[in-house]
Length: 232
Image (cartoon, rainbow, N blue to C red; front, side, top):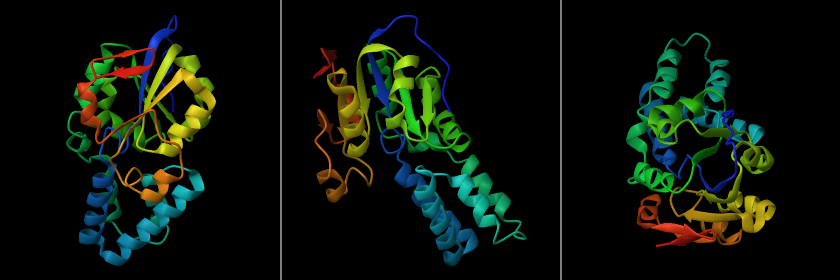
């Protein structure tokens, strides 16, 4: 899914933000979902759903909560509680799971250049998450959702042309892949939050980002950018 907005001329700088575990605590969302499933459907059904979810993630390359629910349904066609499970997902209070300072960081960076949500995901649940969390409005609708965002950099640069980009993401794998394509045109920022960022093996497998912070809220201390370099 992509927002069709195009800038008339290249901006000096465009700020790109991942959503899950960068601006929004998706680990907590998953924990809440697992807890809900265990309470309402039992631990065996929780585990079955999560096995389907993880298998689908490997198959698709992104998390598909509703797609996993559809597959789960194939083995539980007569269970009316499935309607309640979908309601839990669709109506989840995502705004309560924003990391402290996330909206402040978007507002601060937005004073220096366009802010864009650059995310992976499906075309139903991921947009709703971004909308209900308040992130959609915070970036004035500049939202791009791909299957593999690191493979869509030409499209990204066409839609939001700029002389320089800054990408904030909790996955060093994504930052390294984007840097290998965009080179010095891209500055990378790695917030060490979420299970990927705290996995020592995952972190050791990729080059360091240009900048590392312990949490997204630390970026509220940034006072500006000069030639793609953060000024604190």
